[in-house]
Image (cartoon, rainbow, N blue to C red; front, side, top):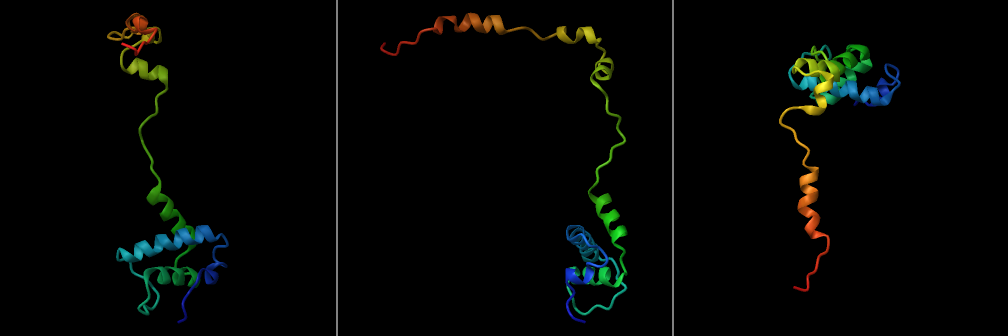
Length: 123
């Protein structure tokens, strides 16, 4: 069989970017050892993937879903808003400005640098 190109698969998926994405997904699956229904002609995985898509052995929608699932990150963790976070660590919303262990060092810093107002490097 002649080499398969993306042109042979356009009737299955008109979006070339999506076609390349799903063909790459299928090529990776083949490289990992997935079986194929097509005749192996000593072709590379990318050619076999495109041939499967062109012949309809691998539906684009299924390949797309597998590609999305592979890269999709889902979490079962609940996302807390700021107020809920304060409650979890035992603070009221009114306590947020006075968290124990924090101090305002701005006045100390201003006092320390007040002697450096003029810099004379002639000494």
